[in-house]
Length: 134
Image (cartoon, rainbow, N blue to C red):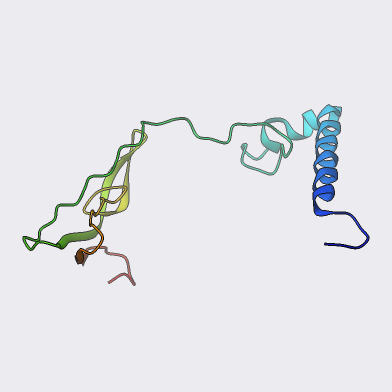
C-alpha cells in the first residue's frame, strides 16, 4: 500500500500500545476493584474483567488416547470395508459420564485405515433418534 497514511504494521503497534496503556490505567483506578471484582457480578462469566489475566484453559484431564482402529470386514484384497453405526452412547469425559453422539459407541470416532488405491466401502447405520437425521 503506497501513498500517504499509516502502514498496517504501524497501526497495529500503536493500537497494541494504546490498549495496554488503557488496561494498565483502568486496573490502577480504585473504582475498577469494586466494579470488576469477581467477574463483574456475573458469576465470572460476564463482561467484567476485560483486561484480566485469568485462566483460559480448563483443568487438565487424562492424556489423549488414540481412537481404536475399525476392523476391516472385507476379505477381498485392496478393499477396506467398515460398518459404522451413529448412535447415542455414554462416554467418559474428564471423569464425567455424558451421553454423546458417537460412531460405534466411541468418542472420538474410530480410525478408518486405508491405503492409497484401496476401495473403501462404508456400511452406515443411523441409529440416532433425533428428528431430521434419519
